[in-house]
Image 1 (cartoon, rainbow, N blue to C red):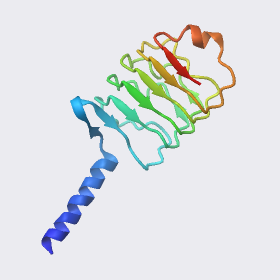
Image 2 (image 1 turned 180 degrees about the horizontal axis):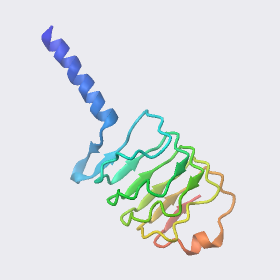
Image 3 (image 1 turned 90 degrees about the vertical axis):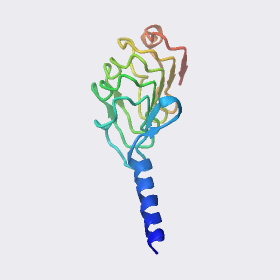
Image 4 (image 1 turned 120 degrees about the vertical axis):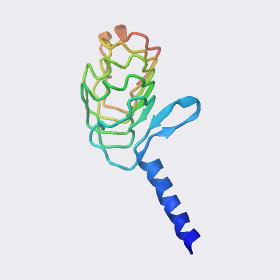
Length: 150
């Protein structure tokens, strides 16, 4: 009987770890993926060392100026399948290591303006938004971006 109860507690603790804590993956990369929380904004308690941030399938409606400012190790940000309709022009200003940004299935009228950011983004995904056309300035001032998926 004792082993059975102890086993249940171990399972519950394991589920809590997966559900609320960041995942440590191979080669020291860290993924932060809060599942099933219906977030309405980017959390402010994401670990500083996070490299892959997955906030997909939430209810986030806007990306604010300082949402990612302290997350300088970010390489991948996935904000797919949210309700994002605005993306602050300076939201990625300090994310110089960012390579991939996923904003598929949101409510954006334009791709985020990344012209002033000092980023390393090579891949921008904005499929299934409300984007009808892309002004020339978005295409000429995108920096290192090699692929834009619209």
